[in-house]
Image 1 (tube, rainbow, N blue to C red):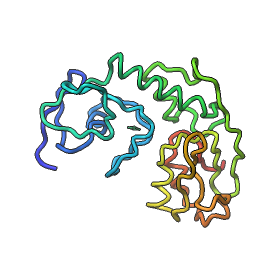
Image 2: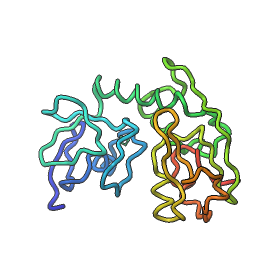
Image 3: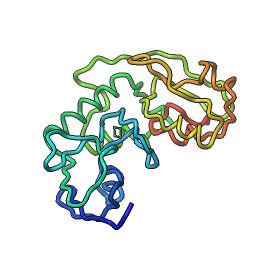
Image 4: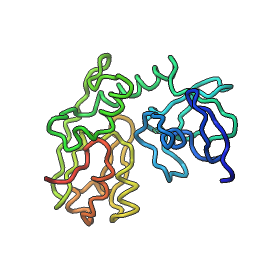
Length: 213
Ligand code: FES
């Protein structure tokens, strides 16, 4: 990291630290880019949600802004037909198996999915894809936290928070449609060694992990 360089995002010239990811440079300067899975301190971002795409002048295809580093003179656009198509499709895929019971959800009005829908004028209910409710049991076994895997968007923030601040009991399991956040041996949270630090619930952007009332 050295002296700041000038880049342009959506016609606005901003100063950014070389090497920082475009996503954070944009957000820090009031330019919104949808994102679910990126963490500011990630050295190797998962780039799994596919919602943070931008166009960079001179690049043949849109790229995820959470993995692309800033360099001096970059000219970036957060909206284009291609970007909107990628983000719209990615969002619809996520929403096709996210249980949407917003009124009963503890994250209602502070949910990242609602924010993305609002900012990009997308529908929370997918129009083109069938709804695939996994109908998994809700885990209320921990003292302070409940986990509804039907709402999980696999962003990984809970896993990071659990490793950094908690007992490190959460991880990803399985692949494809079966992929899920679980405890390492699949046991209920209350029997997993979870110390109820609640960091996972605070980190979850969509209400899958939430504080008990
Ligand atoms: Fe970049 Fe998820 S925030 S792919």
